[in-house]
Length: 342
Ligand SMILES: Nc1ncnc2c1ncn2[C@@H]1O[C@H](COP(=O)(O)OP(=O)(O)OP(=O)(O)O)[C@@H](O)[C@H]1O
Image 1 (cartoon, rainbow, N blue to C red):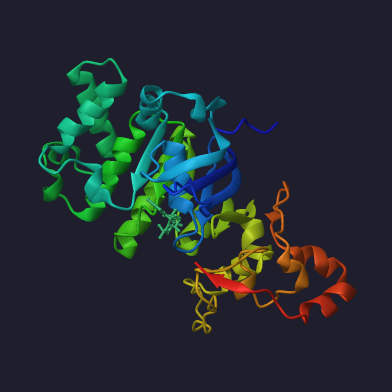
Image 2: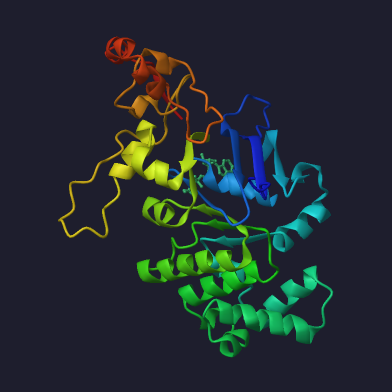
């Protein structure tokens, strides 16, 4: 029997609030996804596709000017939309740990790391300072840091990789059921970034928490996640178990993403990399958001494809049409829709 999801997002829609009450574009549109205990879900997609604001919505930290206009977010069966600000703050940190790209902001600059970790523990658990200190030191050790030295250091005395590992310790030490890691390696060099992700995977195995890993880097996501969700222009366009996605991606955008990544382990010299043509901001007035950049577009793309609730879900008319190959051959040659730039 499949475990109950730790996180279940249903039909999440996020809109920029327009002071003039004009219809503003949906920045995230009807996104649904789930992550189970012990599972790592990767969300990939190019810049501006809505990955970070989806994560911010789960944390209850949407920037000013953005609002949830539809959908629900359940954490361990509790609808987070129904919680007060105070309850939400308690959930954040206690039940959801988070690690961001900007590790410098994970700690206040002029206070020692240890003091900040102890305060974090004590903000959520009624523990003595000695007990909170021992938890903080334990987690600093678990993330392979010289615990005593880091405990007594100021943030500026640590390297970027050390700070990001300390942030990981901070995210994990309250044993949250969900970790959100939003581009946790972007500001790190390749090797340090790999170590941080290896550590995240190792600690996830120890604690069986669910992990939402947001990344531009498809190679990282393919290597570490169990499921992948691909976002484009605020919509989820494909979602599948990672193995399926690697071998049988169906959406043309996902296929292009896979072809635009270098093979790292082959002895062969790398092939010429693919490019996702066109500009990210090119959106049609209606229909499939990827159509203006899609080499396979055809008349039906004028209608928005739905993402069906299937193990390997794809929002594209093509897989459906390919089964009806006579129609497809005709349809693909048809001229295409009007494009608007946003
Ligand atoms: N505070 C804001 N006000 C208005 N629009 C915003 C705000 N924050 C983000 N957006 C818009 O929301 C969309 C999604 O942004 P988001 O940061 O989630 O993208 P992303 O996929 O995480 O990109 P990146 O990988 O570059 O972080 C973008 O079009 C962005 O311009």
